[in-house]
Image 1: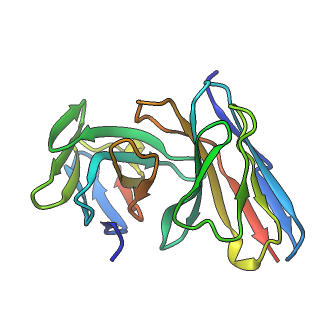
Image 2: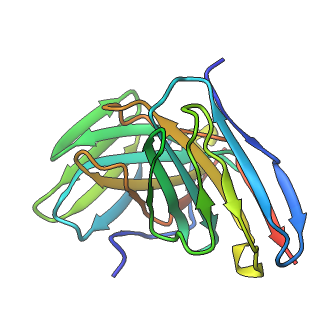
Length: 112
Length: 111
């Protein structure tokens, strides 16, 4: 089944404790993105990647890191999480020249 | 001003009603316009996609883009309770991965 998977789905952590949210897609898509979704603010793009080793900032990249060493994986790294990073995070992927973007199921993060 | 503006609602309609959802955008370079549907506790899924101006119809759904007024619309005919979800409009420039979303409109269709 074609899908985007994220892990973990739920995470409670404390300020300053480094964490990684993994994202993997099995559709051989070139493009991958990370978004955060907050009430009243909607979906905002954090980082995106157009291919392996090619990444760029979205609208809200501060406090986040990404890497794209393999085509299928695009982990989101929070080196020193803060409470304002409490949010619902989505990973997404799409094929080049296609507009259909496939979203993962979301990761709900709470930073205390 | 946010690049894509969308009234968050909520919007509540009776079953069978025609629903009109709207967005405005400010970036004249936007060429691709999309509507996503997001059910509670799920990721967004692409519903409709339009390139440049014009209409696109898919079953009960019609997407409309008016580039002269920078207006994006989604019409749902014969709305069903299963249409209850949050609808997000999104836009992007050609060749760019940067996708800008509206805040989403929560729709409830009452049986």
